[in-house]
Image (cartoon, rainbow, N blue to C red; front, side, top):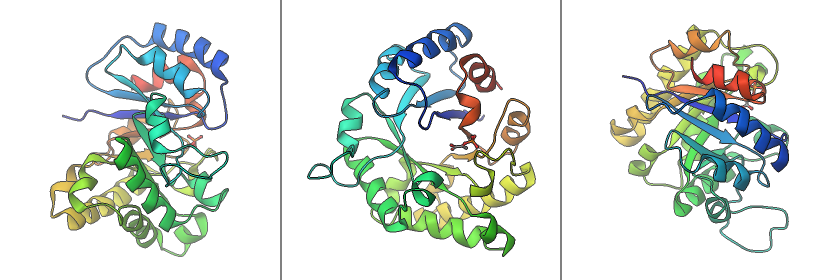
Length: 249
Ligand code: PEP
C-alpha cells in the first residue's frame, strides 16, 4: 500500500505573515490523514513560522530548500543543516534544478550536502533530472543515474535507505510541460534499479517522487504509476486551497 508524499516547494514566495494566513486556510481544508504525508518547503526565514503551525500534526512536516555543506564557518548568507533542523526543518531538498542551473551547484556539492543533512538529522530529498538537450540526445537515464551516484557518494550505502529521491526533468519545472506517466515510469524504474545496485537491494524501497509542472489535473495519473511514491510541486503548492485539494489526490 502506497503512502504518498506531497512536497510543496514555495521557492522564493510567502513571507512569514503570508505563510501564517496560508497555513490557516490550508489547515481548514486539510484535516489530519494517516495515509499520506504533506511537506512544506518555505523560504528559510519563513520556515520557523510554518514549523510552529504544523508542530502538532504528525502527517505534516517542514523542510529547507537548500543547505550549505559545512556545519559552520565563514559562509555569509548560508544556512547549515543543523541551523535548519534547529529552526524546525526535518527534510532538505538537495540538488534542486534551480540550485544546479541558476546557482551553479555541482554534483560534488550535492554529495557533500547529503552528508551534511545526514549529520544534522535531516532527511534528504535528492533531486535529479535531465535538461531538454540531454533528453533529446537520449541521455536521460545516464544523467540521472550519474547525479544519483554523486549525491550519495559521501554516505554509506546503508544510509541511502533513509533518503528520498525526486525525479524532476529540468524541462518540466515551471514550464507547464510535464513528463507523461510512461516517461516518469521509465526513469523511476531505472533509478530504482540503481538504488538496488548501490545498496544491495534494500534501497529499492526508497520513495521516488515525481516533480515538474504537476497540478490538480495531472496529479492522479502520475501518482497511479506504481514507481511514483509522491509528488514534488512548485507553482501548484502556492495557493492553500488548491494545494490542499492536490494533496488529497
Ligand atoms: C519544483 O520547484 O520542484 C517544481 C517542480 O516546480 P513546478 O511544479 O512549478 O514545475
